[in-house]
Length: 519
Image 1 (tube, helix red, strand yellow):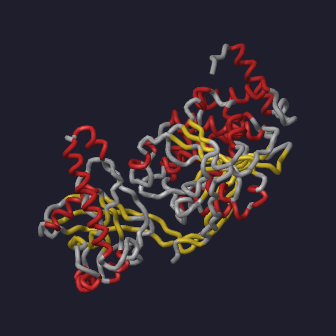
Image 2 (cartoon, helix red, strand yellow; image 1 turned 180 degrees about the vertical axis):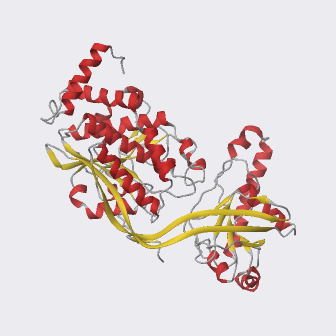
Image 3 (tube, helix red, strand yellow; image 1 turned 180 degrees about the horizontal axis):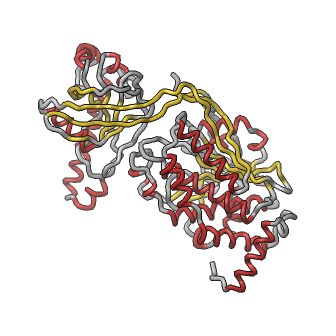
């Protein structure tokens, strides 16, 4: 954007005051000059007065992770509603279902024999609490037994012990580190060993007669003191933190380095002992919500443009890039739209969805509950895959998506749009994130897909998904893009076509799980 002189800045401010007062854009279709002014205003505001850092600090540091069914999830819902209302945007929490209520407490894990060492680890989501108890016990490895009968004979020996049920990794270095420094033959040898070890461990689990979900339950029913796992995310210091399956004893994930230490000590007969204290609260059945905000349309209020991002997260970190960044992008885009496009042609909505991580449940419920919106959706833009600037946009299998998406993208500044690769008509998303809930219903939902920033290894569902991993310049890029695309979609005189491209296999619509975590 060009630098403003003081005189031109004065004229620009006067123009934007007119927009905010509803003057120039009340008639609906803005002139070309007015469109340029609105887009320039959005860019200028986000470049010089972005609220992203402040919003991120409030949400990610202040509230933290947002696991469905936790008090922090509801706190985040209420915070977003209050934030929107402070900008003059109508907002509400909309109940879509019920979930197991649970709240994470502290996790303390220490090795006390054969030497003393504090261990890095945490309980998994929905792990049973230990109350005031601290349990000290030997750590044993799930053995490689002949079959399920042999496993049943061994099973009573776990009573009072912590059982390790994850494979020992052959290396704690990610592959890119090996690729950079190792001899090729060393790298190839390590990968071959790892593949063989992985296959052997799968067979070890299979021969018990159980699987990854049912084995922990069998162990706790046999009297194990707790379950020890390591779900390494193939990067330095990162584990993926998912859910526990035990109901009576804790399940904890211990970092690769410390898990390997315990494993080797046990393997060589040193009989390591650990002391574990975890706390959590069961809160019964609690309501689950989506947060919906709205800027009402003036000419076509019953047609809709939507911004979209899931609000929930796993809770090993703070859900910063999955999906705090998508949430913040869409909140900031709505702030920009309210300030510089307060009377849109079509109604602009934003959906902050609950329980995406358990199967797109919040957005699927919204699609089921609001056919009047789905049937009259001009476009939905969803962002979910990390902190990076948007670099891909697919037509999701809609035959005419190229026509209207290209038309809207043409209004986006070159520094943003020229980095985006488009594919038309593309393939419809069958899952992965919330745009797919709308696509399955035949509605034009699109994913604003981001540059990786090592998302898959380092932040996606990991214990390191925290504020410091956000790249705010890329987020500003995405907030401007989302706001401009929503603006152009709203102003477009034509209703988007939802005709499906020939030869494209369409995903089947899946019903939301509206009562979860209770089986």
